[in-house]
Image (tube, rainbow, N blue to C red; front, side, top):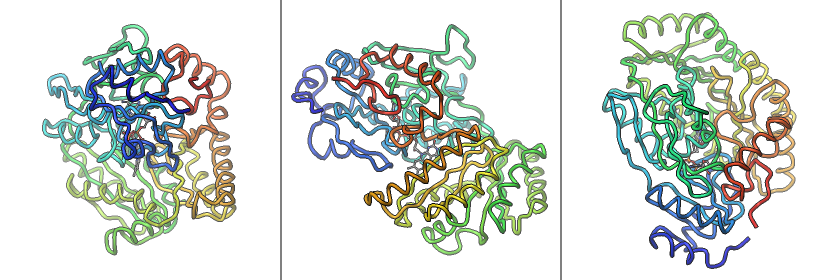
Length: 464
Ligand SMILES: Cc1cc2nc3c(=O)[nH]c(=O)nc-3n(C[C@H](O)[C@H](O)[C@H](O)COP(=O)(O)OP(=O)(O)OC[C@H]3O[C@@H](n4cnc5c(N)ncnc54)[C@H](O)[C@@H]3O)c2cc1C
């Protein structure tokens, strides 16, 4: 519902330049990389936690929706202000407040771009492992709110494993500081945890203290071609059951490889119908020995060709290509319904077979690639348009088939992108009634007026 005079009211409590209500600003803050769009009434771009606190206190008393926004490159419509009100952009709170090699921490604003943190850490030979493929565009606040992951999470864990402390502005406007610079802390409940992955529905992250670890001194990678996708999926199990824990283990199917070849030009990717990238890191001698062992193992597992990237620069060149896969699928001109489903690893080959079945049944190409070692495969249903109701209905049917199967296998409907708008239909079934009630109780306790990111995956009474 419209909120008349909201901009004027906010300018009376915030610096005028932080409150925008012109058409282009509202339009630019209405969507992300999914295809929902809804313009907010007002965009607020604060530069301090105190400004966020003043904004939330006002919106709490007047029951005005507030949707936090990082860089707006989410894949599930999470930062779309569906019910209008305020789009709260944290983009200008992007400072590295402190980077301490002695403590192994970085204290950063939520708007900091992930790649900028990684680059700053590297200058001190430190490593911030969470590496979403969008790392040059996405923000730390968005990563925390979605508990983002990436290829190296196989060995190093996801964003939550690196959040030691948070400053969070609660819906009431109170500022909570929890956790801190200690790498272990068991003082009371773990109040950091509920905010990580909370998709902007429990509080607004205004500062994060993140764990940094030593940068591994060496990396190497094997890039293996397989004649068929299921054989590549089977090789993942072979590697992990042979005592290896690669830092990343990424799989790609034929459709994605073709899209990437078309997008990136000839000669950039090897031939073949399926592809595995295996990265190891650690001390130089150990890395050199392990990549040789893995190369032999890959041939024994059915690879027709294996290329080795012997050092960090060669690995980064392969990662640059891998990060283009999402963009390559988008460049096909088809609409990519990117579902970051996860299955227990023993179901990996079943998932790959199921994707072929889904393709045959739905008539839509289904492109699969992703973090095979985690059982987290991005199943991309490629549809010609989402504007045609008939196509949309068929796509919804295919998505229903996919998610019901994932839930039946004991899998997760999202491993890293979050629920947002895109997956909210399946959320109650995915978590079950008791978990849903606990989610609701937590929301009620922290945001009783339901102002924070309302209308998303928790069915709740929207603000009136
Ligand atoms: C090409 C491409 C590749 C991708 N690859 C990956 C990948 O490998 N792994 C992965 O995990 N994701 C991936 N993503 C998805 C996306 O980049 C991540 O979800 C990322 O974490 C979103 O960050 P953002 O800053 O853009 O957040 P936004 O899209 O702005 O917001 C995402 C959610 O976080 C909330 N939020 C944002 N900032 C805050 C804050 N300060 N406090 C509270 N809530 C907040 C929003 O309300 C929203 O619910 C990819 C996206 C693209 C476009």
